Length: 353
Image (cartoon, rainbow, N blue to C red; front, side):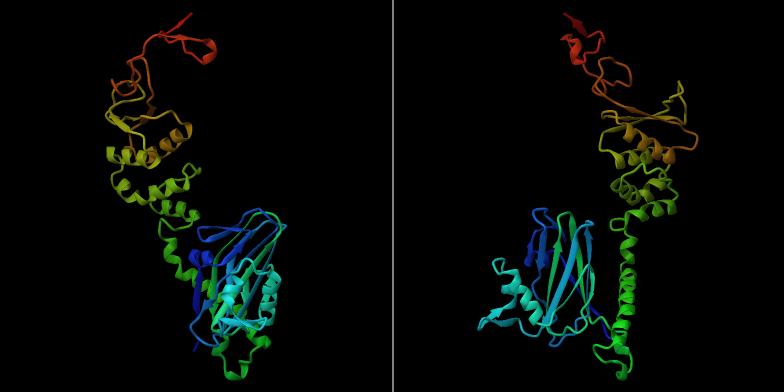
């Protein structure tokens, strides 16, 4: 029977407890600060609570500029201490001491039987056994880099352990060969386990949002909406679709895109006169061409079938027309001196001196 694979996630808190130089911690990611050409990370021991634990695989996500290189190292031990210069030294305290020389830390990794690789974000830990696991990551080169989503698996070879004992010889080619298929299987299983996040509006990838919209019969071609606006629309889609063609649906669509006060005037036609199907939407905010296009695009999908919608942005006006309603879109001004180089408008309230 295949062995149970344990997964350890190294998140924000554990990263914060480690030693990182040349990095800044942003959420659960480490980003190069741009202050030097060498950035290094030392993590405190990962405790499996099991002696002689067989560690399997280290994986993480990394984005680096073209001229940057990446190095990863790890070693394991049953003891949390080691002897240095004749004195018993706590391994965590030594590795996380910023004043300790990196050359001395490199010697510890080498003398402890550690393994490492350059330019990889997926490292097989085959051969490392011990209760505790220590990890170090180094980035060389000037530029922008980010590291995150650290995971450690134990063991990695659940496929290998399912074979008869005659095949299970540590260090043999067959074990490493099967480990490749095990890694593919583990990644595939992770994707299956996270499918629920893909169906959640808050956590689904942005590329899936238009697909959900099409399932609901919404047209979103043209990239009119930002990602956060699209998520709000999908969260409210059921109630909006059930009220399609009503004042409530029109006001709901507008509030998804803006917090400005909105007024809906029914039987107001842009074609002149009254119409039982047409209506006008008044927005009390400054004119915005992008917002106008977004609203027109969505309102056409939620308006009455035979109706036409007019969209008017309300501003401060000195005339009691243009949808002026006393305190809305209207103001009382006094004649003031104006200068031609100050953008003054000759609207009957400005006098030239």
